[in-house]
Image (cartoon, rainbow, N blue to C red; front, side):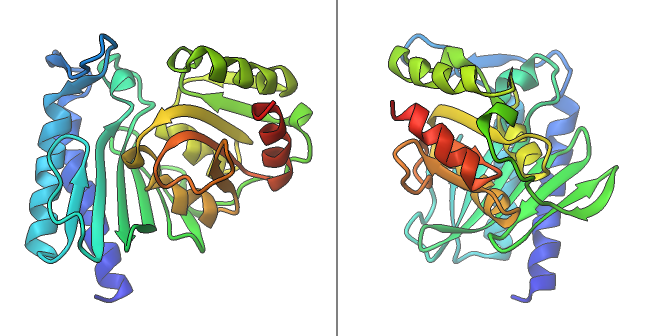
Length: 260
């Protein structure tokens, strides 16, 4: 498989998912709560339809590859190459008619993400990366993504999806960082990591993430020159408590506050 063939396939994968999802957005769609703990974890027909379409295209084109998606059981999860799919990351924003959501597509080899894509079909934007580089394509043109320099938390802008998703102990740690930054904003899900890669913000801090929430974003963040780890400074591949920063200096300062 050449680089051109791969790029064309990923574009087709994104197009198929986007065409499936767009008719559902800002429509009177039904919402199911798939949480078993009493919290609200919504899933829609758009999530399931998009993942079904992507799985079918992957199986047709790369039958030896595995697929792990958010909505259906894994298929060949021990294969050398495995696609990780999150058809709508930010479903709560999606059902509210807010555009801060996207489709996450990652390709892993032996468990390591070697390519990641965030596709936002409503705004017609794509953020992609392979760990060595990252690119943006959309209405604003096609350009290389680079994080921005930021030497101090006092100059940093930070995003999180919602502090209400954090347990009490993690929230106390998060508040220490929030008190130190210049500006803190809520909302964004996967989009927050992409604007970090694009150099618009400096820090994203979250908790309770799953592998399908992060694996596509790692090659984008790292390809743009940023850093993404757990709060324990481990690899972020398994999700959990995640911190992403555009500058290693801000990452180090935030880590000290998170760890108390």
